[in-house]
Length: 112
Length: 154
Image 1: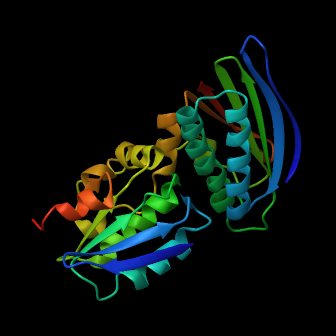
Image 2: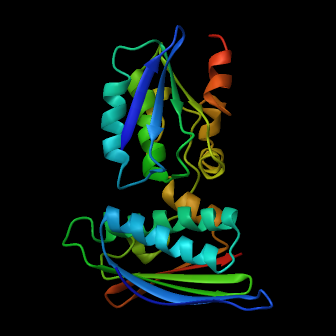
């Protein structure tokens, strides 16, 4: 599973280049996220535009990344496809993360 | 992955498909079989959004078998059979692993997310998703086998 990372003035944007974050890939995803968020800006935006399937292991790995960031840093999510959005909504994780339709919208929001 | 499949879409667009697949329990095989089943269901006329729900339920159910039924022992076989007739889809998942705790379906309550950041759950969503997205769920312990029966209105 490939991730790419770029920094803007306000945030680090991490893009997932895979169509699934499932049990077979969740551990690798979590490890790659750990390196990708290391010593970056306070705000991290995870771009999930390419991801069309996530299961509870993938969801757990995203929650784990949020915890890794700790207090004072924040993980926002952008580009959730319909099925991914549904998993976040059903598990009420949509109340924990800020969800944006795409990375441009996420970046247009100034820090709060 | 072995398969015996028959997928047919009648000219009057009534949906009909029956097929069975078998895998050796592993996370990567779960991914393949879930994609294969949902691909066949889409071809048989199941709407993409509903096929997505089914994909989530199957992934959770089969991963449970991989991680818990076979988790502490040698991985064994998992059989998945599907029968689609018009608006009713029945899926059966059979394995030869350990039974569910107390030989019954877990309650699958929604995990509490109104908690401090560090207490947020990183798991325990599986049965909740299964119960939320499937129309009916039934579990039977038959001798040394587990059978999970899932019904979907499609």
